[in-house]
Image (tube, rainbow, N blue to C red):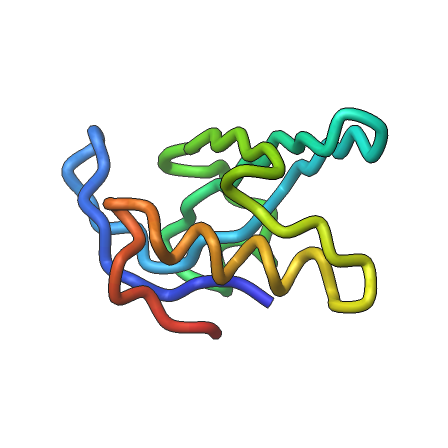
Length: 92
C-alpha cells in the first residue's frame, strides 16, 4: 500500500508515490512516529532509487485510534491523507 499524489520536491521534480518506510509504536504510551518517503514513481521505489522527500508524523491517542482489530498501516495511511500535503491523495 502507498499513496499517490503529485507533490513538488526541492529538486524541481514531482514525486507521485509515497510509502511509509518506518513506523515506531509505543503501545504502552499509545504514541507512534511515522516516516513516509516520496519517490518519483512506484517503479523508482522498486528500483531502489533514493527518496525525493521525506515527511515525519507523530500521533498520540488523541489524534489516532490505536485499534489493533484493523490493519494499523491502513489506518495510518488514512490518517496521513488528512495531513495538509496529502489531502486528496489516493491509495495506490
